[in-house]
Image (cartoon, rainbow, N blue to C red; front, top):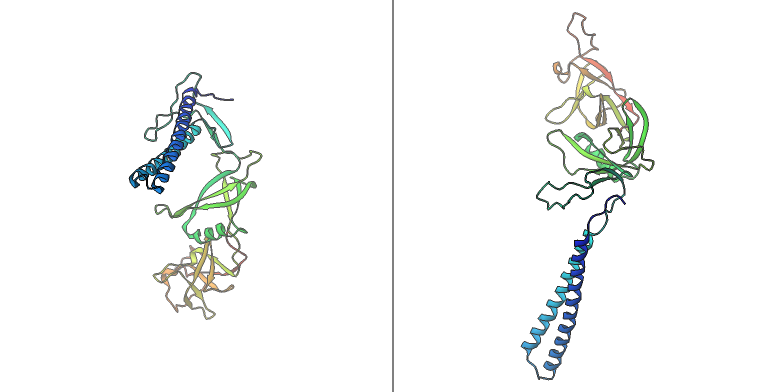
Length: 303
């Protein structure tokens, strides 16, 4: 036992409310008997309908009072119950003899006796870019995906594994990110609440993707596009669909084939049909030509 509260006042209130319930139950029995007598008299044409209606209303009022009494007793019982959580205790904020009160919701003056922190499982909160929203939704709905791995800085060894269990309902317009959460089993208590970790989310594999350097993808009013270098060394402005952007690489789901060359530098000097050749390195003395990279077949994307 860590802390024992003086519960004499609460127990006295509970006893009082239980006595009120017993009294009102007796009143209900009396009201039911009055109602039955009024009903019998009406059936024999020896009583009035008004008397019957009054007896019926009294019976219903007595029954409602019973319900109110039971709700009051339930509230009393909550005051005497224990915290429904299993976890690790923090620092104790009170001493023997201190007066403690409950918060009324309008004041922050109440001091917690002690904080109980759930240790198993742990909830890990993190954010991801808005561009990953489609993958997050897929990972949340597909039981085969959404696996999460935790690591420490500079050490790729997993220190915890779990699953994605929450994606926020809206994007933070200020940061362009979406809040997410993972549930991590922690039976050995090796992880600690408040600890900073790296989160690796496996959002599944996207087959038949083509990977290009992210700098090759250019924005336009009609959507993203790349400059594809054709065999005659002219460029084609080709619309593409970007399935995922991860660091320096983007996965293209439509509009580009593996092995095709794309321009990765100098796109502002190009237009559809312009002639190009692979650029010189910086500092050559001549104006550098657009630089070219080859699109690769992506082995998978989603992490």
